[in-house]
Image 1 (cartoon, rainbow, N blue to C red):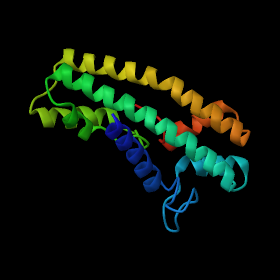
Image 2: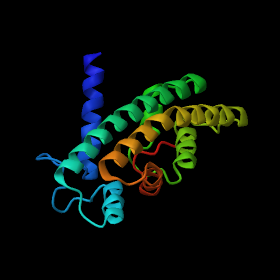
Image 3: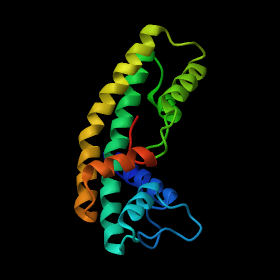
Length: 175
């Protein structure tokens, strides 16, 4: 159990480091590193740079969200593997990483899954996959709403706008 928890923490930290949400020294992006798109949207909306304190608070909320979404994605992989008769690790390899852009992710995932399985999915398999995906998406909605509320309290930007930024930026949205 400790190993799984530690792996989730490391995964979340890796995502945050690679997105520029935090650096090894703190929450400011490392020079030359791409900024986290959500932070860019927040700063543009505010008309100013986020303070170190705001970045730290948003970073903490982001880490919590990523951990929760990663657990949902792992559950999704286990369900899909059970439905299709393959290994969960094979499914996980094909899924976009939590926090990455989801543009075209569903179509790409099905194509990669069919290639991995060496067969086309039946209409029934695709329907079951869609149902499982919709369950995962519904399960993620409360965590995403809670994240938007936290960021709203930190920045003063309405939560509905934060949710829109998350969709535009691709970060934190789970398709």
